[in-house]
Length: 111
Image 1 (cartoon, rainbow, N blue to C red):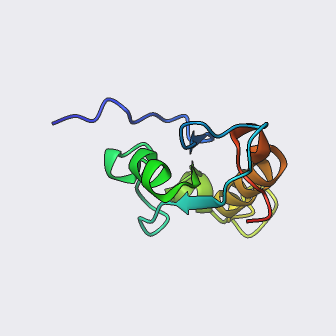
Image 2: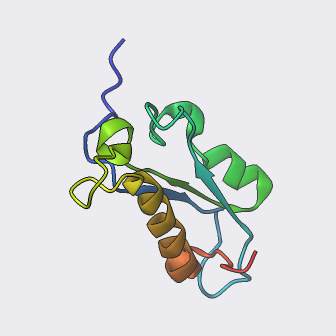
């Protein structure tokens, strides 16, 4: 079975907010999910990682962050051409985005 939700576009995130949450209501706690896979494989778009049920039942805003994997995110050449660990920089940028923007989705950046 082929997963049609997989893409080479790896720099995105998913946000699930409970019904009724928004900027005008009380802000909800936020849970950020960064998928595993040994920095080699995986995607936050896999159905088992969807945060819709957790968001609805837990009354939290759920965010899953993607990042570059394998040689695209962790190639190291010993010089500035491939400095290595850019996948970790992607994760860091995702966390910064959440902190700066999650209130638009009803999330409290401090919780």
